[in-house]
Length: 250
Ligand SMILES: NC(=O)c1ccc[n+]([C@@H]2O[C@H](COP(=O)([O-])OP(=O)(O)OC[C@H]3O[C@@H](n4cnc5c(N)ncnc54)[C@H](O)[C@@H]3O)[C@@H](O)[C@H]2O)c1
Image (tube, rainbow, N blue to C red; front, side):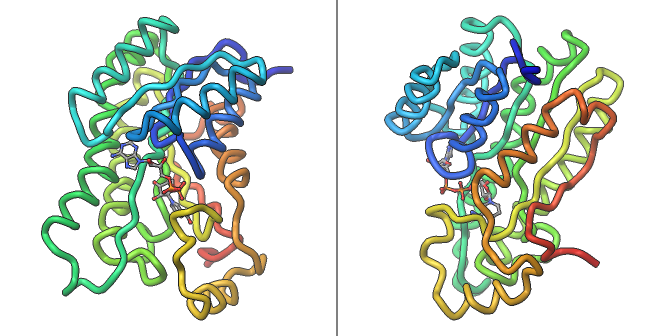
């Protein structure tokens, strides 16, 4: 069985890291995938990878913090693939360092990408999903949004991801009557360029607090997203699914 055969999926920030793995996994599961990123060159290379593997895909340059870009993303997807079944709001940027070193510019850019981007892309696809009476929206939050940061991400990053968690629940309430589910995945310590600058002592102490004793892979996150996009997750909405090696368990 090909679980997502014929579905149309948009993945933001899909040019590298977790987003790239999600795009490849959704395509492997049968979806046609729109590879969106602020960096067009890396988006194009992921779309080419998918096409070479026999999938259907195209790349598009999108800054998720731009209303015009978000709307163009939705309309270009409809032009090419006619419908929008799945939106994965993955694009995000990290902010580190103490509160007193966080400038207003850092605060605004972090929230513009991590939170406003989720709002704008969701708003851009919602009318189509409402008309279809079906849709899956999956937001990539972070354990930082539950814990208030504390590891690599700082207060500013945590606040933006906490916003994503609240947004997920609010949109799930609004989407419910239209059969639109809205869920989030909250990863911790996934091996990507985002955490490659983590100091060794911080990495070691973090690993000690993860019961599975390892960092996560981008495929670990992609698998959770594919499940949330699948028919099997049809009765789940407003859920925040930790992919964290057990870090957050009570
Ligand atoms: N790596 C981790 O440990 C970890 C943990 C928790 C949550 N996350 C979240 O997972 C998501 C992906 O992270 P990653 O580790 O793959 O990061 P990454 O930095 O490797 O990749 C992020 C991608 O987003 C793109 N991007 C950045 N700003 C954008 C914008 N304004 N519009 C569109 N695209 C933009 C980048 O070009 C890049 O391709 C982020 O939301 C991040 O906060 C990551």
